[in-house]
Amino acid sequence: MSNIHTKMPLAGRGAESTKSKRVRRSILVSLVCLWVVSISVPLGLFSASHMAVLPVAEESVIESSENWEGWRLVHVLAEDCPCSKSVIEYLVQRNAQQTLVEEVVLLDGSDALVDRLRMSGFSVTVLEAEDLCESLGSEGVPFFQVIEGGRSPRYSGAYFDSAHRATNGFLDLKTYSRIKDGGFVLNRPVFGCATSERLRALLDPFGLKY
Image 1: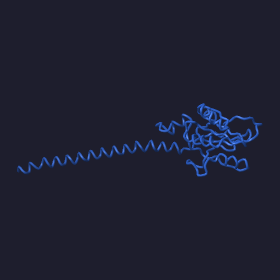
Image 2: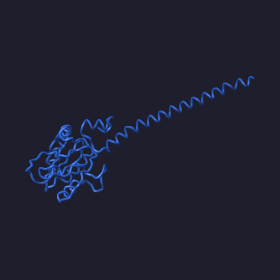
Image 3: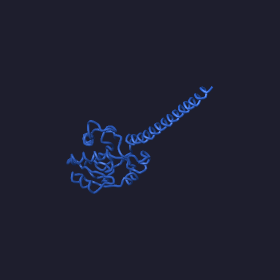
Image 4: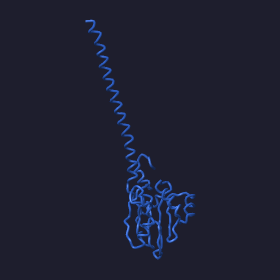
């Protein structure tokens, strides 16, 4: 009998130890799942903010007389947007074309950047991002417009064919040349940075990007 009594507490401790291990394992699994969710949801939203098609102006962002003649290439950019920064570097390196009027509409831009663009031959207009949103419903950058005379833009869209930079590089000059020669180019969807507070809050509720 004494042997039996000495084994029972050991069996009880073994069962209790097994139960304790199961509890710890369950807690560990729960913590891992919570970590995965906490990482996946923000990353998913961050990715979605990059892949969302942004609404941009269909009407000209630059006012001009109806009697004005010639071609304009208007670049709409924001200094705090990484996608716009790549366009800015591209423009500064190639300089403004002499065969047409090239203008940059800079949203909330600094004086230093304005001077840099002007030194490369571009006419620069600084606008508030919210003003462009309210007046033309334009809530994203970067995009450009090809305008003939004082009419509505013949093109208003992205620099690339997709959300990722195409192997063909920036398509602004190619687009302009094709339209000027009588061709037609569909407005490419714009992927990049939201510029309005409304759209930023919608696409990035956790403030990961903006």
